[in-house]
Image (tube, rainbow, N blue to C red):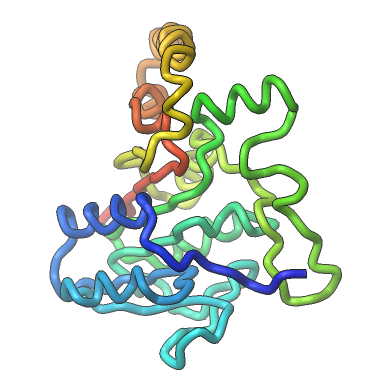
Length: 237
């Protein structure tokens, strides 16, 4: 069994999230990065002037706060202006419980950013059509802990409408959804056909339910093509 792992590079979703904080954030704001991994992403925000808290279950660095995403977070209510959870929610057994905790520790007016493998992208849809398995959620990408403290792997695929429902349950509203790098560009001709069908279906749904913002978000090209889904939710003031 592998223990808890993290990326060692600076992938596209990290660049997108950092750009979001540069555009919408302010120097000195309190930011929770969880899971913090190696701390590389948090360091990049710290260099921009943000007040960083690194939360993770690993003991990579002494300043890390021990944070188990399967349990209540060790932070007071309204502690942060930003909470960033990149490629973490798909690893937990009860994602709604995690969302509840993220919403608890975010301050009024603050934002939560989630990135997670994008099960809506066209490549994932094709893979599921032909194999019955979602891309990045194959059985070899999961493992049962059997009582040990290890990474479960990708066990909870997150659909955008489901995430919106969870956040609405705890009082946050969707502000933006986008993605990172495009997946399997060689399939663009086929994607173009799927995009037309997808937009037609979404148009019909939106005509019946014009107030459902998720339909508008789900027609974004980055949303439909990217490897990772990147969503931003805001807590009312």
